[in-house]
Amino acid sequence: MNDDANLDPNNIKLLLQKHWREGSTRISKEALIVATDYVQIFVQECLRRAHEIASVEGSQRIETAHLEKVAIQMLLDF
Image 1 (cartoon, rainbow, N blue to C red):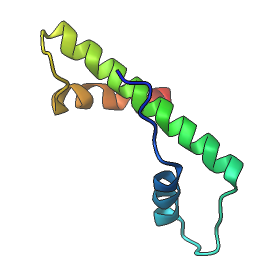
Image 2 (image 1 turned 60 degrees about the vertical axis):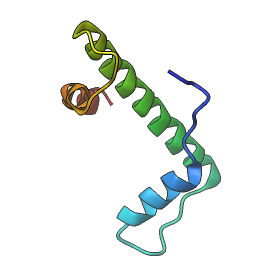
Image 3 (image 1 turned 135 degrees about the vertical axis):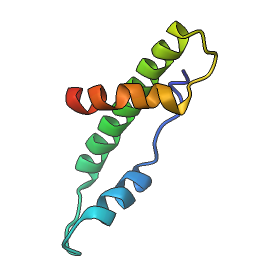
Image 4 (image 1 turned 120 degrees about the vertical axis):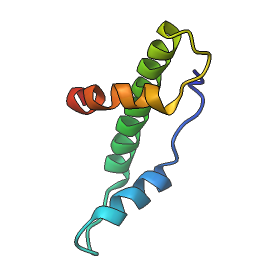
């Protein structure tokens, strides 16, 4: 996996804003950095687990089925 690929904090901010019920809700720069790091770790771990399953199954690619297999456990772990 490529550890150089990082999520754009502006995209995380847009995702958060989309689900805020009040239009006046804001996020500080520091909180946005932490939220972005959290989502980055979540995505990396999800891909790592899916890659592990794909390897065990002899696949060279991560398919949707591999991500589906790790989804429930990821939500419980995070």
